[in-house]
Image 1 (tube, rainbow, N blue to C red):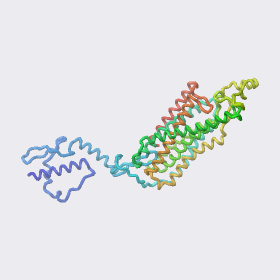
Image 2: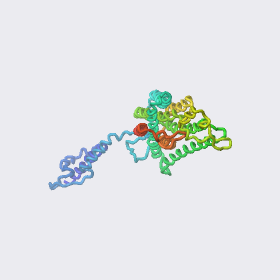
Image 3: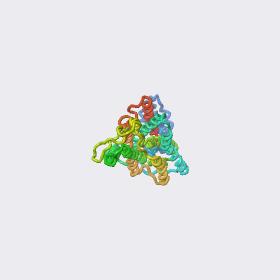
Image 4: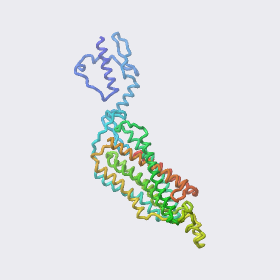
Length: 451
């Protein structure tokens, strides 16, 4: 009598385990299938979460079967639903670098750092390369031409665009570049880094590099403005124009590094995610182009005369220059009473050249990506280190440019002979500028969910 009962318990335990882990069901052996003890299963039954079997004396006896509880069974159902997809890898992308989890893998499992073979639609990628080029050109060239033809009375619109661009740069630095650099350095295929603050350290290096380049450029310009050859405000303004160009070049360097990586990582994304990522990058390029284009467009705009250093004579002492009212006619005195004067500006040809660098760099990155499509391994340690380093360095450059040269300069301190245009502006201009600033940060941060 005891043998059938224990055999029934064994079969009930197997059936219960099968309910808990449905994908692990094992076929019964021929021996057990043919055994007469199968009928003993009818002696066992469930009451809520407990299992009872009929003892030889006819009494109901509670039996403890592991995993037979109702709550445990519900949890088992959840595991079972998850396990339907457990045989497939689920892949997502961090800054275009593929990361796969699924099957027997989990986020805490040992990483698989091999390249995942994929079929790529090459023709689609080549065609969309030109779409990216066109939208990048639209974003960066648009403000330059708009600034040239925009009436003075619509200058508030350009202020809105400039501050929108500032928000774009700030968000790009922190949400896109710094965050993605941290993800690269945190990838398990790199292994454990000896220094946990690697991402922040490289960010600081980018900030210092930007500061150092601009500081050296400013010292050179100041030395020129103090030379005996520069006796007029116009000549000094030409020298200050050089510092402004250096500032724009530093900003553009950070953007170009970032854009090159964007183009590369876009085309190596799998087809299942490529279109989504492409749409995001499309908006990204337009916004970033606006940010750069508005700054290029205003290179050499009118400067505050009082912000320029005094002219000097051959003995090195300050002298009155051609803006001195005592040596001018009354008409000239009236003109000089204005706080601004027309300063030298960068030629349209050079402005378009700076803009063209941005328009072409992302398509160049895409072309490189297409060339290495079958060889690229986003989980390779060297690749992760290279992308993470460039992302963090670019983030540092854009942090300096966005906070110091754009945000602070426009709202408080001024720079390169320009006074802070929003420091004492009317409330409408301040409101438009603030709206543009916040809108730029919000929209670019939203795009950071995908790219």
